[in-house]
Structure formats: structure tokens, C-alpha cells
Image (cartoon, rainbow, N blue to C red; front, top):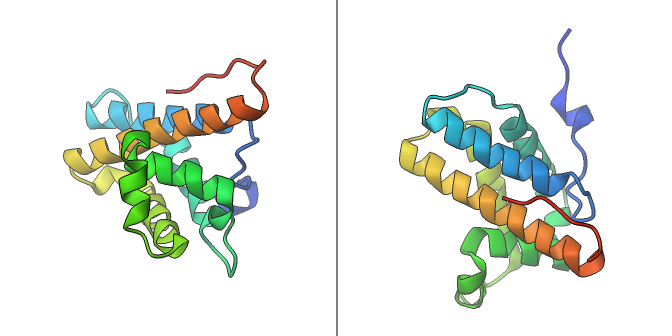
Amino acid sequence: MTIDQKTLTPEFSLRDDSLPMLVAEAAIDIDNYANGRSKNDGSVIRLSHILNSATSGDNPIAKDVNNSVVLAYAVSGKDKFEEYWKHRSHVDELVLQINLAAKDLRDFKSLSESQQDVLMKFCVNLSREIANHQDEYYPIMSRFAA
């Protein structure tokens, strides 16, 4: 019996408490694979599907203001966000970058070690930024983030 990931893929939602943990787990799985410790890739594939669905359709949810800021922080790093955003003419460029990241996550095993390292850092940043965003709305709850 095969499981269709698309039907099981939740929507990219900054309110999803499990999302920072999933993204952190993807970073760990990429690092473990790169260092020959494990071949587990379930979290990476799941994150790939989530990001792909967030960038698909006529009005992708990655374009939402909160989503686009968090995703841009993850791509550029918070310290370089202003510089990154200044050179973007439209949020469509960010959506394209996230879609490409989703495809790289899907195929991460065939990428070079340096590309895997970039993906791992993206996942760490994304996990942290989602958790930071959640803390703005739900400061009482403690969260795990990479």
C-alpha cells in the first residue's frame, strides 16, 4: 500500500505548533545523511511537500504577509533581511525561491555536500523564525526550534 504524501500534507501554517519541530527534524535528517549517520528522510520529504503546496496555485499562501516575512527571514537570515528585501521587485521571487528549495529538499540526497549544508541552514533558520513568529502570538508556550 502506497501513501500519497499530497493528501497527508498539511497546509503551511505559522500557527501549527508542530511545524518548527518538523523543520528542525528535517535539518537534523539532512545533516545525518550528509555525515553518513542515517538515511532517514521522512521529515525532509514532508517539508518538501508542505513548501511545494505553499507555493502552488494562483494565490499561493507563501504570499501572505506573515508567511512571506518568515520565509524571507529563513532565506536571507534575519540580519540580512533588509538588504535581501530591498533587491526584490516582487514577492513572486520569494515564492520561486521557496519552490526551488522545496524541490531541492525533495532531491537532497543527490545534491553536493555544500548544497545539503545550505539546505540544512535554511531549515534551521526556518524552524527558528517560525518559532519566533509563534512566540509573538503565544508567548506563554515554550517551543522547540533548531
